[in-house]
Length: 256
Image (cartoon, rainbow, N blue to C red):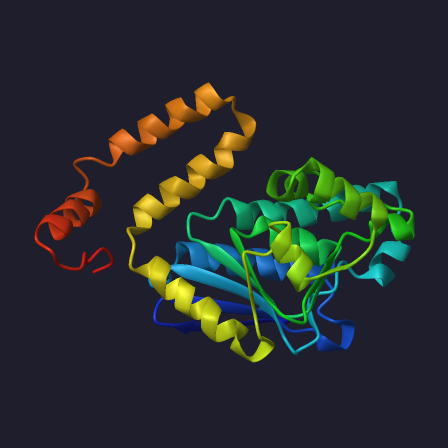
């Protein structure tokens, strides 16, 4: 097992622990991660998921190069689809998933990070899509998600340049939401997770759905989707509690 799981006060920390390979991903670890995330999603005692890497060097250093050396075209299709299945599980999660990027997030590691809803980075983090240096291209969503997050120009530069950028540059271009000192990364990530836990879980899930689905819609279609989702919140226990709490000047109790 290479995925360590810890649940504290409705926050689940999933830690990829393969430090001898800088937490690089092979098919077995991808399947294990996919199942771990799905289990968290179905667990009513979990509200936020934090994904991070073991050690102080790497979040995920990418896909396992030794595995890719032995792939033929059919094997590469299966490996790419497996990686994309994991990133879709992450992106489509109705519960927020925060990447706590504690070091190298390279190739597939960067692609897993950008599938997460937020990316908090330590000050020693580095991001890259270096596949072109191997005669490859990103295969787990990099060519699709990265332009949507940081814009076409910035994404093109990273993908065809193949170079690494540090946490401060990642923050400047919008790849990292926040940057913290390394020893404060997990504490600060959990602090924001607790902020999320104070909000309505169904409203969070619907917000994430609207944000994700907007990528495949025109602005008008996206606005119609938003109106429908907004209006359906009214009359629910969660929305009634939120509105009543505001009028009564008290904290809303959404999760109990």
